[in-house]
Length: 324
Image: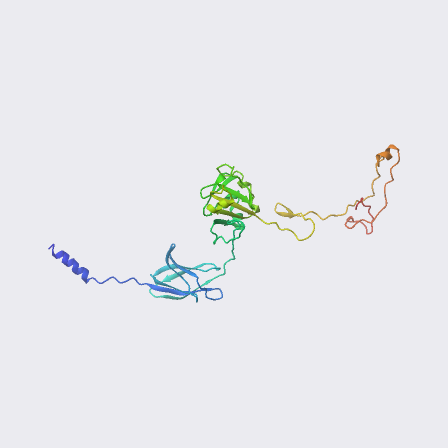
């Protein structure tokens, strides 16, 4: 009986029908812009929840793409192209091919960044710079730096924030800070190698509301800014002043967010005749000789523009002060 059991088992396995192969289909379509024009070299990625990449390809010159051997199921198809906003659509795959899929991309916001500190005396694209650099623009500064300027390190690769009090904080670059990370403001050195090894107590004296950009150099190339840039270099760039093209001096200020401007100058005037001069007004030599002062001037004159008192009869004459 024991010899018969293996033979029966082999016979059952041999008689069993082969398992059907898993059905796969092809997903094809076109990536276009809003006007319907084809977008060549667009990236198309098929994702399975939550974010597993199943297939990826690139569109041809006619904007067409094809993803082969896709198993049935629900997927997310992500399309992106340079200068356009990425878009993700849901795709349900059954037992038949999915064809004629059209994904239109909208124009993306114009975003351009340059670095002016990665290499001294040059302007470069951060993506093409050989120096690892973080460029934090004005919008990020306004969102992050709510209390201290060191908060700009939040959410930045290669940087870390440490705060020891509500007003003291530091930026770590590659695990170093203090006298291992120097600081410049508009190209002028703000820190020295004599600083202590811990976080700088003076870093947060920099006003974030006056900053335009923060560029953080990470890596050995930061040594071009000094031997105390072993970890990196913080390069703060302030906003450029906006000067008026009109001649003269202008003063602008705000009180509680409300713009303030100096009132328009008005001529000096008074509503009555001049008072009599004091008895001994005049030069000291005249007082010594007992020379009487000149009588007060009571001559009425036409008031300068703006000196008419409200409710005065038309043509009323008002004396004016000297220099009016």
